[in-house]
Amino acid sequence: MTALERHYRMLLIAYPRTYRAAHGDEIIDVLLASAGPTRSVPAVREALGLIIGGIRSRIAHLATGSAWADGVHLAVTAVSAANLAALLPYAGVLPWWTLLSALAMLAVLRGRPRAAFALTALTGVKAVAVAGGWALFDLTLVPVAPTFLTGDFLFERGGPFTVALGYAVVLLGLLALVWRGGPPRARSWWWWPVVPALAWAGPAWMPTGTPYALSLSRVAVEVAVFALAVMAAYLARDLRWALASGIYLLVASGELGSHAEFLTRQHVAYWGVLVLLTLGAVIVPYRPRRHCLD
Image 1 (cartoon, rainbow, N blue to C red):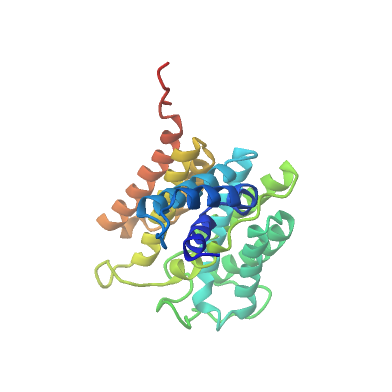
Image 2: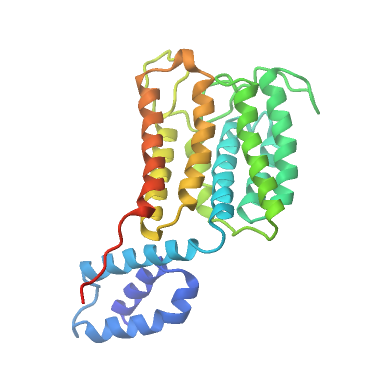
């Protein structure tokens, strides 16, 4: 294998595995035949074309099956990641409950809604009890101090209603998936790095002493994921990403609404960006189609 062929095969990783198995060798043969005899690396235009084509192919592969079921499952995945992120900094104090939350997210990612429902319900009841200061299952001394990633106490900036909303959305979504029948699609392992990014309390970007401060890390991750949803909806002309964005926006809006008296212009701007991106995911699938003239 020449150096040029190795580079081409690395770029083909952008395509789904099934597509590479069916068409990978043919694409490589065409690219090698059109390349100059002395070339050892792909041209920039070729590399970008392969990467963009791979992204389009992956999105087209994802836009299959029931749009509403896949959108609900995608939203459940995102909210489960946020629920786990809320517990992650306190893993040293609540190791078993954090582990249960991680197992619940794992069951969601692998498309096991029944197991995910049981694990989420158990973790959610405990989380709401801690947020309300009630003793349940085991003795938990409140406030729960963090061990890493943040300096806030557990649920210091959110009451039982806010915590219950996130878990209730996940449970209702899982019930809908169980009622539909058939396992949902397994999700990417790339959802795991989202969790510590959501849990991290920095970098600080709001004034010191803000009662309900959002971390820049969380805002950046959420805006990036919503922007990817808009791109996917644009390329696939599909509403599943709009549905997922709308459900997550509901949870985020409930959290902001529970702190209405502490909201600042930064909070409103953050919420407004999420609303605009959600509307974008709703609108772009209906863009006019282009037709070639005969």
